[in-house]
Amino acid sequence: MAPTPASPADDLLTVRDLLRYAVSRFGAAKLAYGHGTTTALDEAAFMLLEGLSLPIDDLAPWLEARLTRPEREKLLGLIEARVTTRKPAPYLLGRAYIQGVPFRVDERVIIPRSYLGEMMMTGALAGDGAGPVPDPFAVERVLDLCTGSGCLAILAAMAFPEASVDAVDLSSDALEVAKLNVADHEMGERVRLLQGDLFAPLKGQRYDLIITNPPYVAQGEVDAFPAEFKAEPVMAHLGGADGLDIVRRILRTAGDHLTPDGGLLCEIGTGRDILEEEFDLPFLWLDSEESEGEVFWLTAKDLAGR
Image (cartoon, rainbow, N blue to C red; front, top):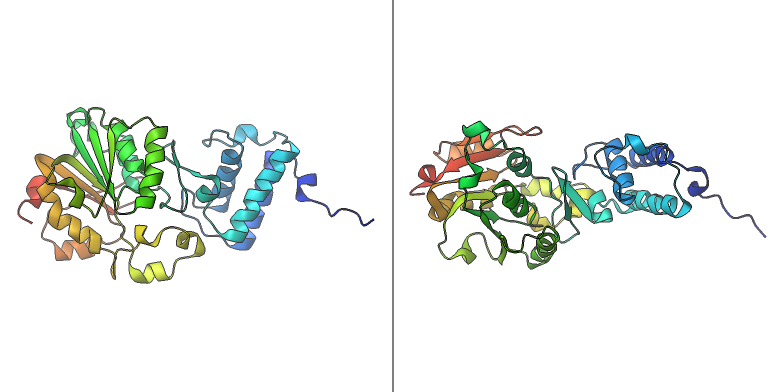
């Protein structure tokens, strides 16, 4: 009888062993990142920790932990799937995080990674009373346009404790995932999911805050996506020839859905120059830890009469 071929699980015994192996495999495969991680090392660390149901914030305490064979085989299967399918790690694991808050994800939704989550959860919008939303407790109604997985709507409910949140998406598939996340976070009494095209299902309702991370990628960029980004729903990325078709529609209509002291917070990617040339509006550009000039704020007064 021929000897059974050796398995990597025979020799890779600790978390450190699996980490080194994963980074080597990912590097050799020239994977693309950007779905919560930016390097092979960070991607491997996330996959190992999430795959072992461990806290994802620090790998160091677990590096020398010896793994059972089923654990090793599970992790090796995930590593192999990442290389062979080129699916982003959150799809393989069914989970993504924003500011440490977990959300269910699958191929029905774009993987959460919006800068708006950071801005809401860190208090950056309040700016110690000098920001665009100086008092989070004064926000009573929030609208999340293009909600996808529902992550920003749920984070908004956390960041604005007195607010009810409406979350709209055109995709019924995405809303099925959002429904699961709303249930997971026990937000059913505060977050309402609506299907429709932008403001269409809202029947003239007005909000103190509108947040939106709409599709804003240009056609040429979508056409050139690596496999990892092609795994996501095209409609969650594609914003027309220059990426800003949906942003333009939002700008022309948002003022009709804001309270007199309300405002619009919108992520647009790299289209700042185009918008500033096209719209005579006093955009306030807000930066995050990882972005500069990709999120704008406009008040209801700014948008009046658009």
